[in-house]
Image 1 (cartoon, one colour):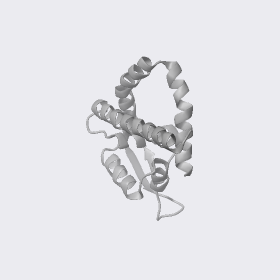
Image 2 (cartoon, rainbow, N blue to C red):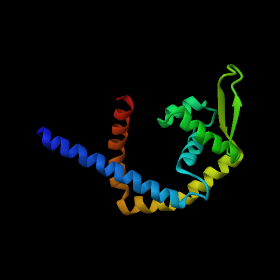
Image 3 (cartoon, rainbow, N blue to C red):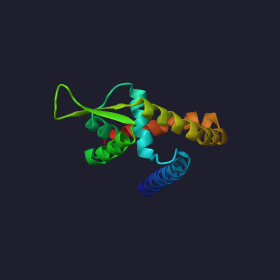
Length: 147
């Protein structure tokens, strides 16, 4: 394949991914519980799945955002009572973040709200297509994370 075809294929791939990202975010924003943003849900989901505390720096790295952006998100989550932020007992300069019982409930409510929309989309595409797509998307993500 020549460079022109490679470039067209690459542009088409990234155009589709970016358009899908925007459409998914719009749909998620409409069904998430009132006041919850996608970034809030993402952090709560991450903490719930991790099962233990994380530092704001670790969370920022996991989400590929600046520490300032993560601090902003964590401040909103703490204000809502969804996370507990405490000093790190080993290093007072650092903080540690854990999901609170209210945060776990909010995360579960968000999952209950988005699950029907996601299930419907996957059902329309078909399990086979989704399973075939996941390895390609995971490989692309891995390449982007290391590059």
